[in-house]
Image (tube, rainbow, N blue to C red):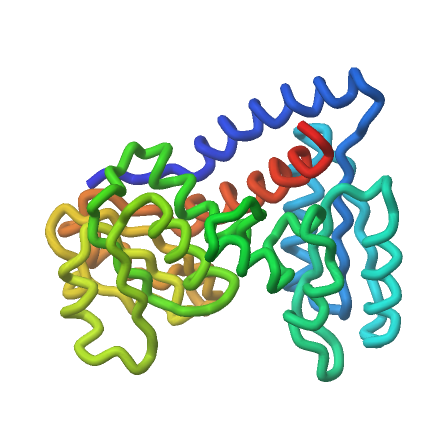
Length: 275
């Protein structure tokens, strides 16, 4: 089985990002990413620290805005950053305060700055094949498959999970590459049997080690999007030990989709800045 090393892929992307940052610097532009932390949440803060470290390595300015959990403060901050010409990319972390939804907040992020595809308009443009930033995690799925030279045209792909931040956009990106895509979810009958027919399985369901060997046909490529914290540490949605004897290729957790996702956020920011 081939292990698809997201860290090495992210490093390759990062080197290209550095080149783009240097070209922008020559024109007096420093790509700037604004990260909004709406509430006090240690998991979100930990992820933001990863973004900050990665941004520093490639030369992207990263401004973190930590808020108190007040919905009005969040809206005011997002609107202010949306109108700030020095900010090229914006992401808003979850959880969100009060009754605010991701769609409501995302709609206030300009599409041109929406580097993590939070604005519903971005997903709509993606569905229509128009230029838009896809959610970075979904984009990482396609980036890994492309860099691993996995044939997509005509391939059967099974996406397990239908969220608007991973499952649906990942399916759209795969469709755009002419894959034949099945989107599965909690009410899919005989889920393991459906997944077993696929050449590519994307696990994005949020359940630790749910995808076992019975879900994977021999030689299939498995992309594990899961990030589940358990007593044993961070594990994916795939039972890697069980699947290793069947799959042709697999992304590890950690070290697979995550590093690529972070670097794509930064690449999107640089592109939004004009690279």
